[in-house]
Image (cartoon, rainbow, N blue to C red; front, side, top):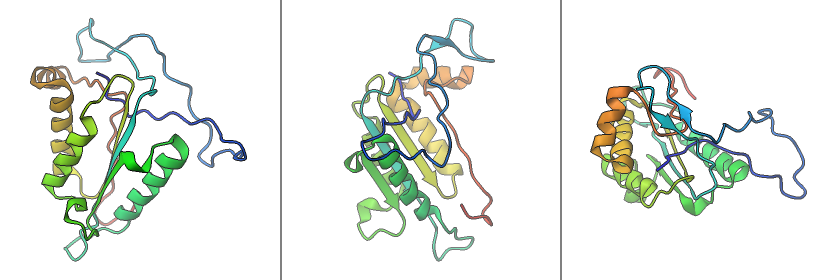
Length: 186
């Protein structure tokens, strides 16, 4: 199974002819089997997703309001990412789970249980060429470790997870974490 989070632009709709402010999209990746880089056995191969299947997104924003070193902007990041995925890549709002720490509904607050439940929803019934997207804005260390371990185990099984750790490879098209210091805002 491919767990793809590579984004592809949607064709422009009639009446929407302006070009995006973020510039031109890079060329599509090759569709034939590719070889992993350093660390993986030479017979390991992967194939990029065509991203023609279902699109699902999990968006998490935690400002930690009222706590020491509270962040600002994490919930705004989630709102902006939701709009970007919907308008630019055609993700449907009903195929997005949004967890933020300003919610009144306890099921929409980013607790460990809710994040794990949302990750299970994200990978449930995933098929080749689906586009699964996770965005997290907040203090990431524990969440990142839990997310990576859970997703690999849920999508690939324990033996595949062990092989991934051993060979430092991943079946996902793109895995990226970026962040800022607690004193910075996004």
